[in-house]
Amino acid sequence: TYVVTDNCIACKYTDCVEVCPVDCFYEGENMLVIHPDECIDCGVCEPECPADAIRPDTEPDMDKWVEFNRKYSELWPVLVTKKDQLPEAEERDGETDKLNKYFS
Ligand code: SF4
Image (tube, rainbow, N blue to C red):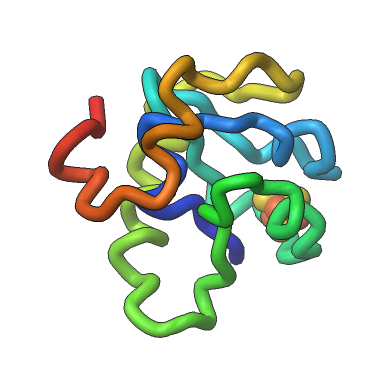
């Protein structure tokens, strides 16, 4: 599966949702997640993210992000249409520790 990681937080660009063939992105207040059981691993969303926040779970230390994506995809509504990024997206892109600082 692919998962959305830390750098989506407080940016929430939504280019990814437009290309996903199975509509498995879910939207929280300030980030998106992928449902790991719905993702078909096609990889087309990865290069679409301006914040480079989408990673394959084959990379190191992704287990916690798989669980995180699973948890919130079951709580949040699906998003299938692109919308504006958050107002501070450019400024927040690349900041460290966004999960603790901004996640809501
Ligand atoms: Fe959707 Fe493919 Fe990205 Fe999985 S890898 S979230 S199926 S676009």
